[in-house]
Image 1: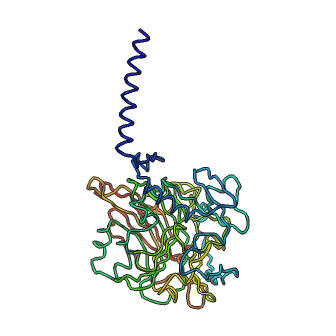
Image 2 (image 1 turned 45 degrees about the horizontal axis):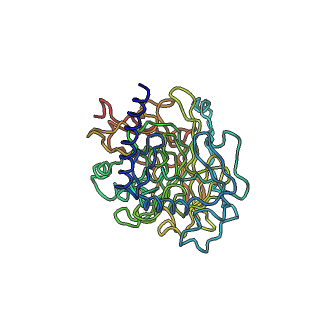
Image 3 (image 1 turned 30 degrees about the horizontal axis):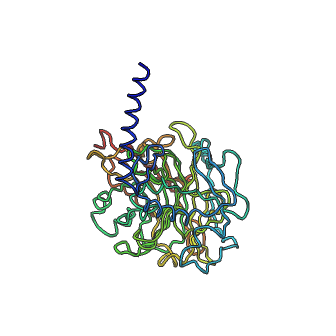
Length: 441
């Protein structure tokens, strides 16, 4: 009896082996790439494509001085600051990393009143990044860079698209200057917004805001939800729009998970060929050894519980002209060299603050991807997400509260925004929404 089973098993094994060898013969150039968190399906990837991917990764993943394993699975490489990807940019061949700290914008004087301090502030707390949880930091003279993997590239449409926004993308308020029917134009390319923006074209040299951090749910892998600042200049109906962006985002396609992450973006040609997210291409020069762009933010806000937020400042150094990014109260993260830009080499003409989602209309319905907390603006503090203390930087490198802003939401049944002003939060707004629901079919 046992020998019969063994013969049968051997026969089956031989058949399986034969099929496997046949598949190898049919696909001699194929390499199987396993999934990571089910965001990359098992699929055949040609060895030629794999070689191209690895060549690209070797280019952007610089040799580390130290490697730190984050609790969330990220690998953070501590790279010598003079070896970072930024300096591979052809326009930065002769660039010397700015060593003298930029002149910080002069803070606006807060209006003192006899009113009771806003009790919302007592439940607001700061955040850190997940790779800090074990107390590890990168050594002085190095910068932390989130290592990119083969899986990260495979989740993108192509190697060319890895780390980039679709080149049909246009910031929401910018689109209103281009076409009168902006809501149709913007939502037509799959992006929906709830934003505030400066209303008149003027000289702007930076922008600041404190942004509430949440972990909105994302319906499908190629959608995202983000909250950010846009600093813009150039023509909104051509190919020369310059944009600098920073905030937090949840993007399963880009990161392989659903955690909110600190991110940056830049382009000098309306998202066509230049720029990228984070440090996934050359350009942004990092100077900070403690903040990793693209790393997860922790903890996050909860409905009715503690609220966590991050302060982001983008401004032009009045002496050297580089666009710097500040995080928190006074932490310098790095800068976008002025050489990268055309219009922003001079100044910005518009600023946007707010939320954005991709609506790919899965199953021919509106996506259920959430914006902000997933609650609408009218739900207020502790439920809806917020931007507070909206400010701009003027020619004299001074911060002032934004006075003249407009708000825009293409589809208020799905995502909306409500702005206000008080002495504690200055100009601020609540925004967000649930995506698909009875209210948003």
